[in-house]
Amino acid sequence: MRHRKSGKRLGRNTSHRKAMMRNMVTSLFDCEKITTTDARAKELRKIAEKLITLASRGDLHSRRLVLEVVRDRKTVDKLFETIAPRYADRPGGYTRIVKLGHRAGDNAALSIIELVEAQFTAKPKKKKAPAKEVVKAAEQAPVAEAPAVEEAAAVEEAAAVEEAAAEDAPAEESKA
Image (cartoon, rainbow, N blue to C red):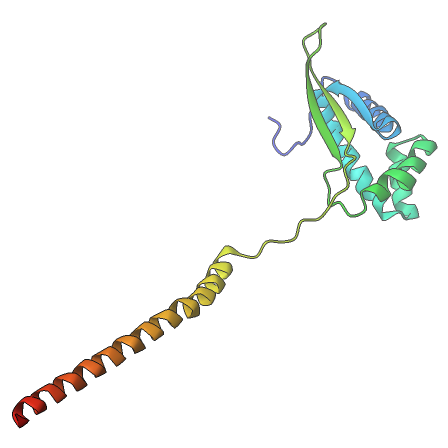
C-alpha cells in the first residue's frame, strides 16, 4: 500500500525519475512551454511552482536551492531575472496544463505545460452578503416610511374634518 506517499512513480526508479524531472523543469524554464504526457505534466507542475516561489524570494540561499534542481546556470539566471519578477504579485498558479489528445504511437494522453503569461490582477474582496442585506434594508426603510407618514397625516386630517363636520351638523339641527 502507498499510504502517505505522494507523487507518481511514472514507471521509473528514483534516480531516473529525479533526472527526468530535472531535465523537464530545465526545459520548461528555458522554452516556457513543453509537450509531455498528462501524468508527467502534473508531476512537473509541483516542482516548477515550488521553484518559481523560491526564485521570487531572490536571495542567495534560494538561488543555491534552485541550482540543486536546475543545473544550468543560464536557465537559473533567466528564472531569477525574468520569470520570477513576472509572477511577483501572483499567489501561485504559475503554470497551465492544456490537454492535447492522444499520441498516435501508443495512445498516451498528451498535454502542453506552459508558464502563464497573463498579468495577474487581484480581485477586490467581496463583502459578506448578510451585511449588504442589512444595509439595503436600512436604506430602503426610511424611504418607504416617509410616504406612509404623509398618508397617515392626510387620513388623520380628513378624519378630523369629518368629526368637525359631524359635530357642527347636529348642533345646527338642534338650533333649528
